[in-house]
Length: 281
Image 1 (spheres, helix red, strand yellow):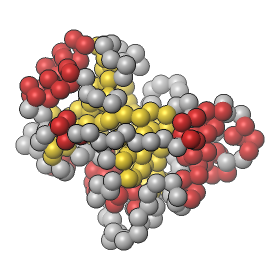
Image 2 (cartoon, rainbow, N blue to C red):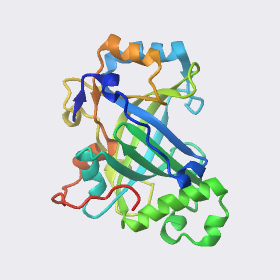
Image 3 (tube, rainbow, N blue to C red):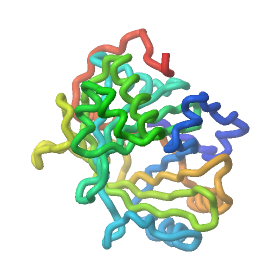
Image 4 (cartoon, rainbow, N blue to C red):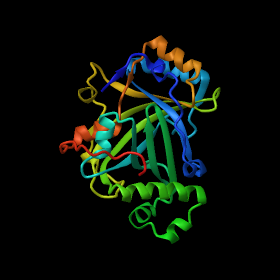
């Protein structure tokens, strides 16, 4: 777990990640920055008050102010995507299948690419009953039923899945408390808690209740007290209220990957290989 004392200042004048022509035509592409912090629960009320002073609770939150997220992460047999993240490789990506337990929604096939601090995420919202079929067989008839933008994002996901011989590795499930700014074009603040993981070797989003292992336990996060994961998400430049919040509470950025922490908690890893899996070649 690496800390970044300078916080927003570490970003400097990093260039924006250029999108390819194909990526630019995908309707559901998000290009942004994501800064993470491990914050003690005692600081949450003050941070929450700041979020509510500039915005509101996300419209998808339940009556209790949270919703659950479950992601199935894919990787190679040698855990190349894990090692790229653990080594903080400059150009790396993740593939995950995401759903929202308790909600009626499609299943999302997500490609999350990172170059330095810039995040580019594309996702295809596909019928929950069809995502396995799409991933395993990618029949033209099934793809043809999707809208053009969703089809491009699905083909991008499926292409990376087969090109790199990926397979199911880990389920990660957690509770999110989300806020969105009403002052900015795009700015979000979220708290993630109750992060648990479960080993997975099949293309399946269901899980046994007794198979979960905690990811955000102080033993895992190496913190003296219970913490939650605070994420600040924004485009181009951080809003002034985010900068003021970080400085006022002296928050320190951390490199915290739910997938990497989950793998560490669940699996015995093979030795790291010298080969790398990156980009889309």
